[in-house]
Image (tube, rainbow, N blue to C red; front, side, top):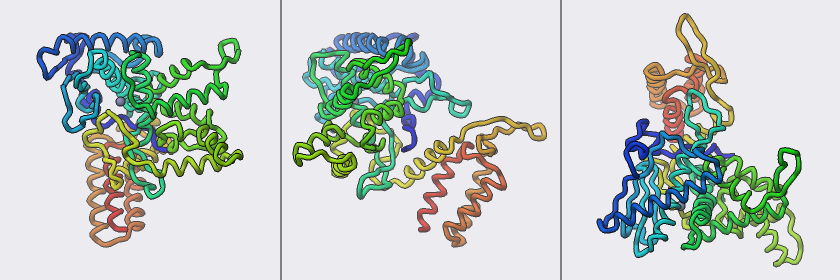
Length: 431
Ligand SMILES: [Zn+2]
């Protein structure tokens, strides 16, 4: 398992606590068109697109379950072309809270379709999971702001092991976004064909397996195509990649496919069912489950960056997909460590009249100036040890002693993540 997908870096609604623009108070969503004459049409597209999307989402999730009132709605720009990306229809940029619709020569209904697709990205990046447990240290639900995407994960593919990739679940994320946009506004152009083929292949396989659920009276009913779709849409809006992955694992149980492998698939030919069928056709005999898995691994190994296309702009300062970002590797390792060891706030203890917050491992969660000055002094010590020419093992032993035995610093303390990344990046230079 990879670390859970993190909230998007620099998501506008995360950085700005007070909404800069509140459509409920300030009026309609700000719209800009590069041709003044188009403004009335653009307003109509946004208004109509919003009400179509809201109606469908209310049907899927129930009323008001998606974003809180605190969420600032995106600005929408209608521009006639994007010179850098001539083939793109539109994009969503979380850190600017901006939707761009490229008008080209598209009809208003086609532009509305693009707007709806981008608006769904906005919603999935700002969705809220009311069932998720949060704590005073992470009051924001961490599963939102991503749909199914991961900002980055550690690659499993041959020759790229342990490198950073942001390819995971791009295909499923776009497939769900576009499929829902099509369900909201059918009979216009449809994009992401391969990705949607993958998604619909999964749904067909789920139906083939006869998956379903028990009703209140304990009566089992198989799910219909629509029920599977709606379930997947719900997972998407809650950023609940775990639930979606569990569905995938249930459908393809015997093939032993990892979450990362699912995340790297890009079309229906990557699914175990397709590979299985193709191998029977080619060889005349049934392959073993293991052979199917091996074939899928081969297919995933030869995918290129061009196989992973998205219209969600990358985070402003997030890790780049250059395969060599050691800081991002350490950041992922830190997140995974916290996750795997289930480190959270546990309790508050009073010592000599001072209150200390304690994590589940019994360490003190330092905050503010206290955290800064402690970690700063340990960082100075770390730099000294490196300059003194100690080897990495000796340095780790000494620093861990300071952190955990002498000062009992919790990994949840303010600035610990940055310190962790700094320490490991520095140690990398020694080996
Ligand atoms: Zn998209």
